[in-house]
Amino acid sequence: MDKNNALTAFSALSQETRLDVFRLLVKAGETGMSAGDIGDTLGVRQNTMSANLAILARSGLIRSKREGRSIRYLADMDGMRGLLAFLMEDCCGGQPELCQPVINELACVC
Amino acid sequence: MDKNNALTAFSALSQETRLDVFRLLVKAGETGMSAGDIGDTLGVRQNTMSANLAILARSGLIRSKREGRSIRYLADMDGMRGLLAFLMEDCCGGQPELCQPVINELACVC
DNA sequence: TTATTATATCAATAGTTCTTGATGTATGGA
DNA sequence: TCCATACATCAAGAACTATTGATATAATAA
Image (cartoon, rainbow over all chains, first blue to last red; front, side):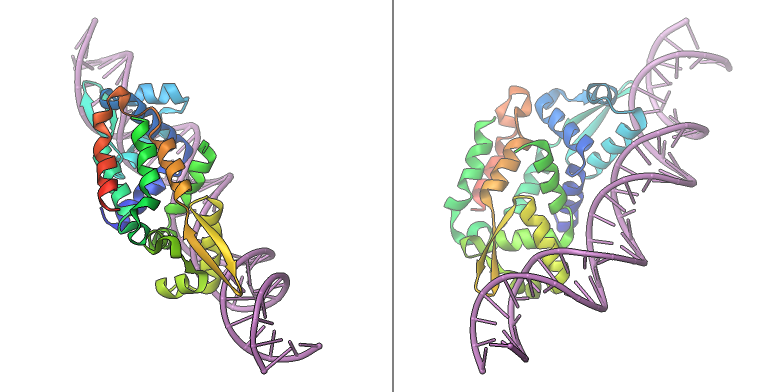
């Protein structure tokens, strides 16, 4: 993960539809969802959703798998991990107790 | 943390100077850095940096403390925790093992 | 008070991003 | 082959964002 990857990822998450999509796919887990179902669930037009899914996919936060006529999208947890690691690199000026609560909060929602 | 807070935060991190500032302040830890030192370190003009610091502060990712003529900025780890918790809410379709690696990666850099 | 240092705000321009209608491509069924 | 379904791409206008020079404010020192 370099700086440009990170910028692309944060930019991807800074738009309402794409943030909704990512959170929906986080909830969906390994199963993921088809592009059409995502669009229907969020009430977003086909071409708008397709453009936004492409942006999320390019950012490394989601991946896709063609299944017949549909394409299934899934949250990419490796991409997410890389992003957080980049962001928190050398964190807290050598005082881990400052960012430990971040980790704890994350742990408890899983 | 609601969706608008999250969008504001990701938008704040999606611009190069602001991402640099946040990572610099993460490294600086509790000590933080003055606005001027941040600008000098990153080679960004005064008014541009001021505008970018204001955006980061409004996003809840950094906070500030006036000290005489200077203003000291610090990464806000509570804000960061809230953002991650929002993003990972109800994650992994009930299968915690999928996002545990994210947490582990974070843990080891502290 | 006047000057200096440190930072913030303003208004305008330049650049970027979003959405949309229209159209293209891929897959599978009749 | 022809059609329907599922999704992607394109071009253009609208909306948003970033940077800049100029200026304002806040704290302090002379």
